[in-house]
Image 1: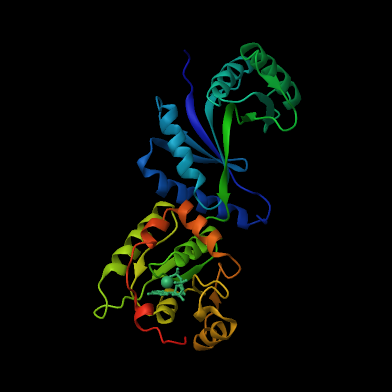
Image 2 (image 1 turned 135 degrees about the vertical axis):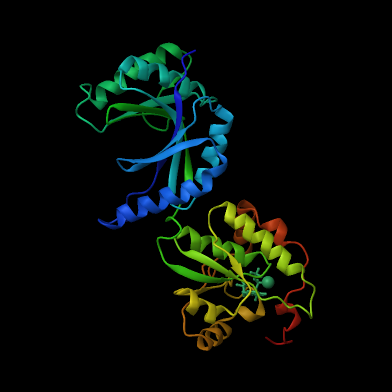
Length: 330
Ligand code: ATP
Ligand code: MG
């Protein structure tokens, strides 16, 4: 069988990308992907007309391409990733590539073709591409239904600068903004469930998080330090955290040029997280204190921690300095 080079098209939301910000956003996302995909057979990453294009080495298997796609889906700023093939800008070749891509999208029962022509140099317009490639697919998959709305699979065909990209498997990413496009924040990381999720949420909004953990040593064991280290590694794998430091948060924020402190507090969750106490902590520091989980329920936070991969680590028992120095009435 004919072999096409595998590619992954990375889509991002263009809404909110105003004018000059856009280039910065794209370059940042490209850099973050390059840094994260070191372990995969990636040849190069290009920017083409509102998308990033990840080229995989010739001979990359579907399994590895899917793993690489999954890694991309968790990167802040990625709205969607589509796994497919690069091929010649020739309607017959595109039809053959579409057949392979669609076969890899099984199981499904309905599909449609959605073509996009970025270059008017290619003589066939997108409507005609839809019809031509749709016809080939109907012949190859006679048991499947063409459906214009609510279809299981959309076969994407993009004609860009003398080349075509064809894909069928397309999965929604976590969205947000690329880490590094919204400044720095200092995140107070306990070894608990909430603060890793709070850190992750700020990273998803494009902030570079600097983790700070207060150890209770020598009054406690060093267990919480190990747990926070593990948590930092999970966050790192998602391309989110820079490094963890064990320093006093605001002084550190100043030195790092961070614009805010971040905690995992949620209103009323425990006795120390009342409005009065929130005001008291705010009064103690000059920088704004951001609390991305303030309106979240514990169950929602637990689900988010499970998805992120920090829940199990956080569930391990580690006496931290807060339990140690906790007054009876906080
Ligand atoms: P978490 O699940 O994040 O530990 P929590 O529900 O246990 O939160 P608290 O113990 O009141 O709540 O802590 C509130 C916030 O203070 C935490 O989310 C975290 O941001 C910060 N914090 C608590 N303990 C530490 C610590 N040892 N080092 C750094 N930050 C901490
Ligand atoms: Mg805690």
